[in-house]
Amino acid sequence: MKKVWIDAGHGGKDSGAVGNGLKEKDIALDVSLGVKKRLEDNYDGVQVLLTRSTDVFLELSERTKAADKAGADILVSVHCNAGGGAGGFETFRYINSQPASVALQNVLHKEIMVALKPFGVIDRGQKAKNLHMVRESKMPAVLTENLFIDVASDAAKLKRQEVIDALIEGHVQGIAKYLGLNKKEGKPVTKERDINIVSPWAEAVWKDMTDKKYFDGSRPGAPITREEMAIVLSRVINNLSHK
Ligand SMILES: [Zn+2]
Image (cartoon, rainbow, N blue to C red; front, side):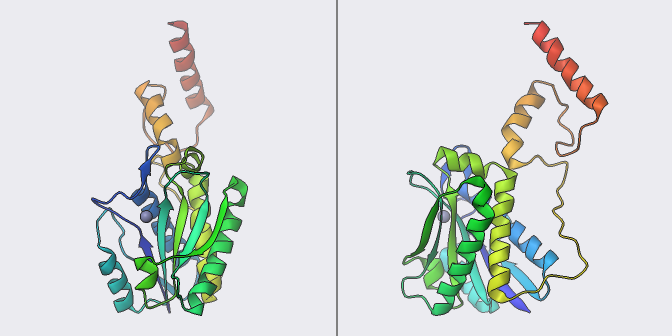
């Protein structure tokens, strides 16, 4: 059984980067939870351990100590970037990293960029830096910087569920390839969602439209029937004719 440690950056009182209505800690958690679910659902012989599965604060030293203690085979720390510029995706390993960390970075970086291809994300490259998470982890460790919160074009991408899915898929593919995991047989790849919870990318518009009473606010993820569509259209037309 391979043990994968996924470290969702920040959390609790530490939001990480903030901008364009997004918080780094939330995206890091979404991606991390998605990676755990998809890896364990679709691959044999892998267990995914998380630094956090909720919005809580942990010190950096607590994170690496927990991963070391669990005897994880690899560690991936999930973050978003900030600092303006053109935005994009980049990965970090430690400056004097073991060759295994370089190998993990190579495959992870490549697979995430492949998954992001449809969305025109800039590739900022594979980098090395003296960062706690990649320095203090005993196992091969890579930190991913998943687009820029404070760059409007990147933030717009991060609000789309397809982009979050692509980030999850890229991490899953990279980890599975690095560890040589086998897909579970006879189990279809499923991407279930809870239809009662609005997707992050649609949240603002859904709130606006329900506030304006075009929709009643229930089941945001359900398909719409012709009769429901007729009701929404009549609300739109009636509203327009009153102006
Ligand atoms: Zn961060």
